[in-house]
Amino acid sequence: MLKLGLLIAVLIFGSTAFPTMPAAENLTSALISAYRRSPQIKAQRANLRGTDEDVAKAWAARRPTLSAQASAGINHLFAFNSDTQFATLSLAASLTLWDGGMTDLAIRSAKAGVTVGRETLVETEQSVLLAAITAYMDMRRDEKLLEVARTSLEVAAQQVKATRDRFQVGEVRRTDVSQVEARLALAQSIVALRQGTLEISREAYHVAVGKYPGRLAPPPPLPKLPKTEAAARALALKRHPAIRRAQALVKIADLNVARARAAMKPRVMLQGNLGINANAVTGDTATVSIVGSVPIYQGGSLTSAVRKAQALAQKARFDLQRAGQLVSQGVNRAWAQLAIARATITARRKEVESARVALNGIRDEASLGSRTALDVLDAEKVLFQAQTNLASARHDEEIAAYSLLSSMGLLTARHLGLGIKTYDPATHYRKLEKAAGPSKRGKLLDKILRRAGKG
Image (tube, rainbow, N blue to C red):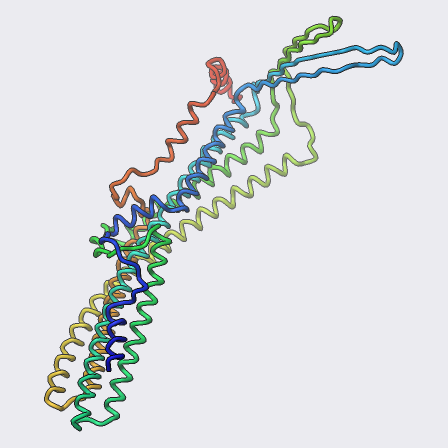
């Protein structure tokens, strides 16, 4: 009896393997932690900063280039069997005057690529925050299920003790004792299962949020959602990052078609060269020239590039259509799951209430001798299962509500109002504007060429 009591106490009050929990934390603090600590978000931010540099790289084609070359050596003249020393320094500069609009198209394509990167970052942020919410709700649910299981174990232990006492005085048979002991063993296994499940959820919380959970506070009220599924779908098709990313990819594909066609146009370059030669005979040199080139025959590679770009542009449009279908499907799924969860909660509440009334009645009958201890345990089992079902239904409602928010593209730190300074991707992008750019004369030349329809 003493060993049994100790075992039950351990199962009811928890294992010492769990570290000491810190103070209670709420869902907002968990989301802030996930937002600030997520390696996925940090990786995507770094990737976006790299994408920003594509714009700077595209702008570089509008600017002049300057290179220097130095050489020194000895020339041996075999006819005269003499050596001549030489040393030269040359500076070469070039500027694209007209390239059929390829540079302008490349800049526009790079900017659209930045839009793709930003929408991918938003999608990553949504995924991280939804994972954190799911981990938070899983912990709350599993804590509740463990609490219910421990209560069930405590009740089973009390019934075992009472049945054994009645057996000692001959009121029940040995079979009755065995039956309630079997129920006690089942309750012990369920507590062990719930403890293991909670530990798994705890580790998942650590991965999703970036720290181990403390004592979790009840979740806040559900976020404000559209009144109809149609309104939610319309908002999703307008705001979801997957839609915006697909739209930007269509733009890039169209620009690539124009770039492939521009590659067939002539190019005009301004080139200059300054040579400093230590040889007194040759002397220094300086040249300035305008060089034009036009592709005449490239083996069909240029027309092939146009056809490929056109095919990829068609693909991008089909991808946009597919993205719209998937976003609409996501809204429909989340909306249906939310409706199911709410209907289930209503039913589960009635189930819990009915099971509690039935249990009280069976307990009264058992006190009068018309019911056995096993009947009481059966009624307890029904009540505990109903409470478990209700906890799971509430969990499902929370997840479905935030999943619906995510399916509309609104599950972001800014929209949730977490009260923290959020990452602004435009900050790094604006720094590129301060990098070395074209001179005032270069900008004027670009303006003239654009007006002439050549830029």
